[in-house]
Image (tube, rainbow, N blue to C red; front, side):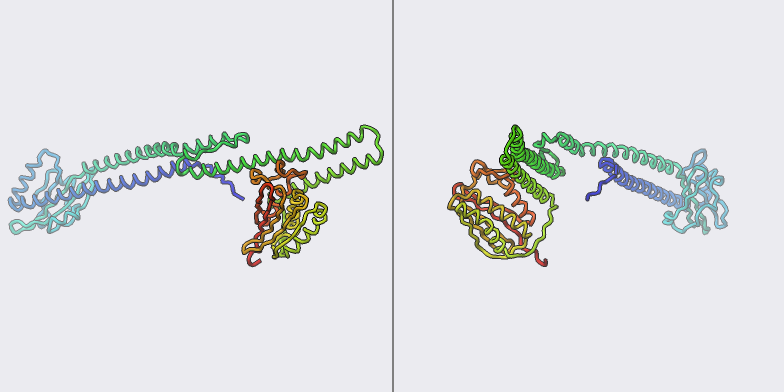
Length: 466
């Protein structure tokens, strides 16, 4: 049993969601790495500029001394917004000079401990005052035998604003990219799944009266080609089954109509006037014969239907095939002698099959051969045991069957009337084929017009270990 899925999600929605999630992940990672690289690059540039500034200040300080350096510092920054804030402390920690207004923004205690070299700029300290961000560094310098500390603060407020705006810009770009990815995913998915919709429309046109239509796999994408081929094969099987069913229904109606019409006609004639008891007896006997014929047709049809539905139980056993065939030949020899037909058996072997079904299949073949074997003819039943199977061949030297009829002789109700006229119902060979296929074997026929017919049944050997 196949379980039916109740998941309402469509393939298109799943593809769109997965594609959008993948795009979100990739874009987030890409833009995140890009933002990190830009920020790190700006940080490195600020450090390099700060190192250059400290180096220049140290050179000026050593060249001009604290007093002149302080005068230049105050004169240079008077009335300007300084990008750098500079303070010089003596060995006692007292302020020697500083950028005007620096004491209100940056106390000397917020700076990191002074270092001996400007290489320590990598260990700067960041300090926030209101909305302004400063990078702080301090170095020691020697002048006139005294040690001084130079504290430098870099105003990074503008850089922080740029980083913030850059981050917002990347978020906007990411959001827009996600919207664009979703739209692209919807467009691509609809375009990719369009062949499925076309295939659905093609299949919707198929009706019981239009089973000859096909999906035509040549025009579909490579991924749908196997599906189209499978649908075409299924339609071909359905068309063949529907054709056989329609033909079977017509043949069945034809076969049943004749005996029923005979029974009805004879009864109506018998009731048209008073009859003698002998005449009524003849009508009843004729009716019984027709009913027996109907009963035989129905029994055979029920058996074949059960076999086709795999509901017919079989009880296999290993028995002597020669003894079973001799029993069948003995039963038909009385009829054969009246027609001057000889029945002979050859071969030996043990067969693994249902004895009753085996006798029924071989008996149908012998009965069928008797009807088509002329006077002074012969019927041979040959047994042959092989490594993988056991064969029974029933041959006659009758009128034979035309090659145009051979592909259909095992069909129900089919009779090659042009070459082998018969009063049978056309179910004998169909029943034989059903029996042998029920055992897992097969049946084949060879015939030549004017020379005779051979029907061979192949039964598989007993499975190993059974």
